[in-house]
Structure formats: C-alpha cells, structure tokens
Amino acid sequence: MECIFCKIAAGEIPVTPVYHDDEVLAIADINPQAPTHLLVMPVAHHANIAALSDAGDAALTAKLFAIAAKLGRERGANGFRLVMNTGDDGGQTVDHLHVHLLAGRAMGWPPG
Image (cartoon, rainbow, N blue to C red):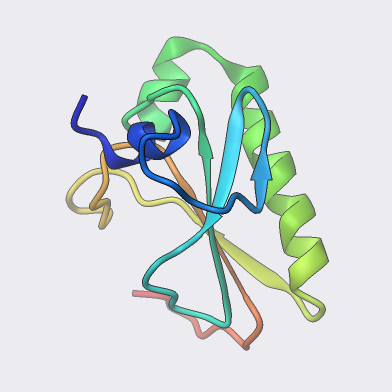
C-alpha cells in the first residue's frame, strides 16, 4: 500500500499520536499552517469524505468530527477551524480522508 497515512496508522512510519483508537488517529501536521495544526483521520482508508459517505458509515463520520471538535476545544482557547479538502480542485494532496484542525491564531476569510 502506498498511502502514507495508512502506513502511519499501521505503525510502519513512527509518529507520536495526539489521539488514537481503533477507528481514528490524530497527529501533528509536519508542515503546520497555524500554531496548532493537527490531522484527524480514520484509521481505515477512505480516499475522501465523498468515499466515506458512499460507504454509508455515518457513525465514523460523526466520530471523526466529534474528536476533531474535542481536540479543537482543548487547543483553541479562542476558537479553531476544521478544514477538509476533497479532490484536486479542493486542494487535497493526500488521498486519505483527513480533517485539518487549525488553532492558535485568528483565521482570515475567505480561506482560499
């Protein structure tokens, strides 16, 4: 398997998880765009939110966002932003669903 996030989830690439259970993994982004920049992802491979939606796993979708929100509340005293890029035009660069959690500074709008 060539997916870097699958390799991380399988323990083939060592990381220090911020959160980890059987279904969800959160790690620090190696190229942070804010003082706090985490990636929250399912352990199982889903290319993007459309693929997870097609799989019909609403419980995993809800859990992914619940954990991202919990981590955001813990790390973003004045607020946080969740970003999910999907597809080339959406800016997705790794084809494994992940939510960017950004916090620690004021966020501008529009984002891109």
